[in-house]
Structure formats: C-alpha cells, structure tokens
Figure 1 (cartoon, rainbow, N blue to C red):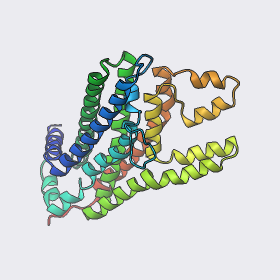
Figure 2 (cartoon, rainbow, N blue to C red):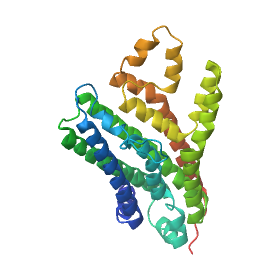
Figure 3 (cartoon, helix red, strand yellow):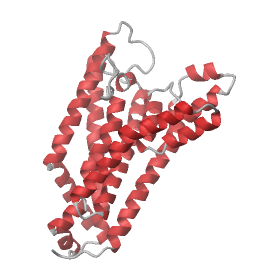
Figure 4 (tube, one colour):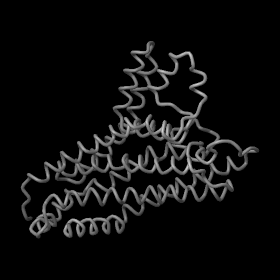
Length: 312
C-alpha cells in the first residue's frame, strides 16, 4: 500500500507540475469563467429573479444572445466538449512515455507490484480530473452568488454535487481511453492522434449521424432505435445526464417518447422532477459510462500486466 501511495503521489506531482496540463487548465478555466460571468449578467439584468432553480439556470443558459454558432455557448455544452480533453491530456502518454524514456523498466525493477503502477496512474489522473472540475464548479458558483445576490438552494446544491460526480465519471472514461491507447501503442503521437480522433468523431461528426436518423424516424419503434444509436456516444450520454440533472423539468429522450403516448402528457411535461427522480432517470447513462471506463481500463490492465518490459 505504501508503494501504491508513493506512485500515486509522484503521478499527481507530475500532473500538476506539467506545463501542458497547466496551460490546458487555464484555457478551460478562463472560458468557463467568461461564460458563467456572461450568463450571470444576463440573469441579473432580468427583471424577475424569483422562481425555482434560478441558480441552476446559470449552467444551462447560453452566454450569448446569438446562439447560431458551432462554438459552445453554455457551461453545459462547454463541459461536454472540453472535459474529454482533460482526460486525454492526462492519459495519452501515461504508459508509452515511461517506456520510451526507460523509466518504466527501472520502476518495475523496484519492490513495487506492477499493478500498483497502472492503478496509481489511473487514480492520479482521476483525482486530477476531480480537482479540476471541482475548482471550476466552485468558482462558477461563487460568480453566480456574487452576480445574482442569492445562494443555491439545498436541492440546487445537491444537483450541482451530483453533476460533479457525473462529470468525474465522464472525465474518467476519456482518461481510461487515453491510457488504453497509451498501453497498446509505443509511440506517444499514435496514442494522441487516436484519442483525439475518437473525441473529434463523437463531438462533431457523430451528432450529424444520429440527428439524421432521428429526423427520419416516423414511428415510436424507429425513434427508440434512433435513441439507442445516439446513446452509443459517451458525449451524448453525458449531455443527457447533465441536462436532466441541471434542468429539473427536462426528461430523457426515452422518457419523452413514453410521455407523448400518455393522456397526461401536458402535466408530465410541465411538472419538474424531484432530485431523486432525476437521479433515477440518469442512472442507466451513468452505469453505461462506468462500464465503458471499466472495459477500457481492464484491457489496459491486462495488456500492461502481461507484456514484456525491457530496459533500453
């Protein structure tokens, strides 16, 4: 256990002392702060700040009046696009850089179990994702309190905390995917290109695919198939979970199909979900994301444990 703690501590120090991670963090942090500040100004300028979940609207309100742009304009959309970048940057050279530098062979020659190495790398990356996301949410909350002059309610605080958990799981998937490619391929450039390529595909091209499928759906069965295709994307799973969590009146896509086939559709669409109901609604999406992360990590783990590591 002491060896595992030592390796984890060393990896955390490497992450927070890495200029690449620091630049990425500052860029993401600046973008989030600007969007939250702009959204808070729009809400503060509104004549009526009364109502439910006003504070949560900061995280879903577009920061610009012109929304006809490909650039993410809300906290929700920006997190869906940029959190994968955090995980990829932390994991793209986790294993192959150690091999290429010759430090991995030296590390495994020490009295350290080999599984402690890859476990510590994943845990250190997950902790870094958690610290990054927590700091962003705390600063965003502080800006909202300052600009709106009101704190989040107990339910809003609970929903923000739940969003934090979902975000860490989401970032953990991309971290696991990057570590997988780093384990499978010796060249760091190859693992980086593959990780970024998967991210670009799901972030920009895959939405076009499932949007066209949804547009052609002319029956409940076809619509359900289209939703299944959309949920093959981890970004869609995260976005759906975030929307249901941060917007209590929102239902998941499968729930909408069920609601529209009932007589009480108007009532069900206008009645906000409780925190527990929102949690139940997004639980399947969270489980799928966790399973995808486990699959990526297990493949990396098996490959790392049984491969031959030679000194350079």
